[in-house]
Length: 213
Image (cartoon, rainbow, N blue to C red; front, side, top):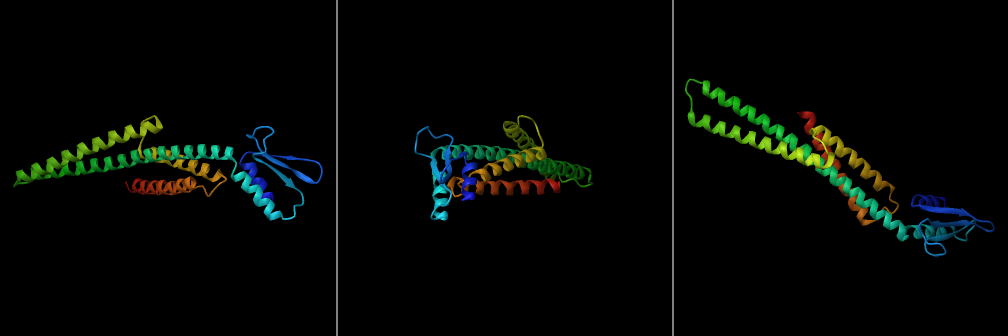
């Protein structure tokens, strides 16, 4: 029964002790005065304590006011994960852009080497220089697009490292929101937890790329 009382308190219910045989009554703080909805009488010595506790939990679980708050919390958590996804997209774009910039530099160096050789293969030089140009343009496009995506969430220019850190903060907050929701069997909450795991996996992959560069 104590566990049921703690669940009710975490859901925003109040507990008021009364005199007499009953221990007290619990009620949702959002319930209308005089209403019988979202109110439970708690007996000190019920005939079947387990059933009494289950009935109490069921009343808290079915509280319409609680579900309204829970839906708001879930929406907030999803918005946090949306921001985390955008920041990770920005971080991944910057990493890819840096890789393309590195490829461009290698291609330019190779072109210069070919130009200095005694027997210059003009066609090969032209191909490699075209490739270097393509890498350079792709690097610029990825970097610019990633900065725009990152600014939509963070409001400032950043790096792959700062965007990843921002994504991690949002996932941590979203996980906290999910952990505080009493009805852990809510399908929407289950879906949210799955998304948290997915985003955490992306963060791990981005951190791995950053450690290797």
